[in-house]
Image (cartoon, rainbow, N blue to C red; front, side, top):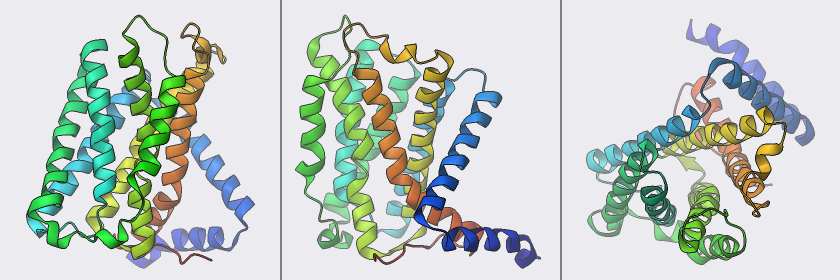
Length: 274
């Protein structure tokens, strides 16, 4: 019976695999658009997308904690992505504490503490299982550009300039902090279940975050992009950052869903580079 249920999915994935890059891109765009329309129609308060996004990120980190405590191994995990994640969460928590102080602050702080614990375990307790040779993307390649961009493009509010820059830095860094993890997975080709679950959770979280901004812009007929005084570039850059990370993770999410629904397993296999 399992084979019968998966037969339509097998045919669907096989059809997608045979198509050209343009067709695959079109199918992905239509799927994303359909998901956005469904979210807009089903969820009345679109601010809940942010809470859902942050909650899913917390769940992803809890999956990593479970792996580290039960398997006593951090193989397949990128220490650099965890350090970058802790970096943007620390910046965002500082801003949120003084600017908002709400459920977002609590979720960010919870995720930050969990991420710092993962970093500690990888650096000290489970150092022997960390494959540093495969985690070979230079940290400054990812951290420096967001810092420079945040100096020039940040929100214009009544808060201190350093707080506004930290806010922008956290947004920009979050959008690309997963790159070392994806690079490491490309190096290994096979991703074990816990790491796959974690990265998939990031993909879902980022899609919800991106959906929030897109629906806000749509509901305001575009005027929402220019609601922060003189900083006309800020909200477009936020939207771009969310879209970039969603796009970065989209390819992995495709292979994750394919492995689960077509093959019935969580051991994700990435294609060899052409």
